[in-house]
Length: 154
Image (cartoon, rainbow, N blue to C red; front, side, top):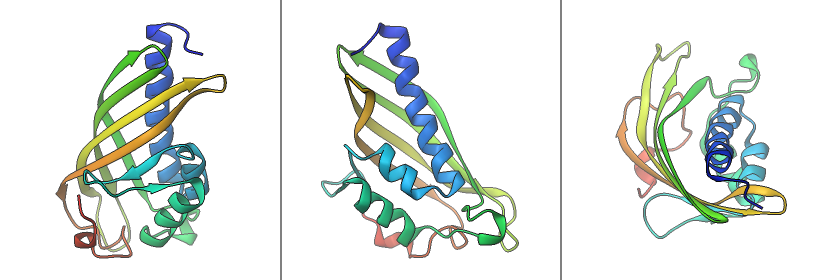
């Protein structure tokens, strides 16, 4: 169960950072596991749920570079997290900026937006129950996504 406001806020914030670390490592199975009890999607009503489905979503839409450890060659920067804890539930909102550097794309920001997250704490600790992504600015994602970003409905 939860263990105090500051400790709970830190635990939730670390989940935000863990997501970024897993994406940048190209560990989409890990992303699926992290979000296993959550729905994941844009700001609309759609969403993907379940570890296997979330893993498949990332694996089918995000390029990985085998010559660079099978990573997407990105850094997801999670910024300005605001975490509000209420007993065994929490909400967080944060901004993100993804930068990428490849042979074809020089180091640059490629996407900026906001995360809106919900969490629950139980005997196993804090976990995501919802992650909504609001993409606000899109740069050159040609070396990052294997699909047209217009296919996503924010």
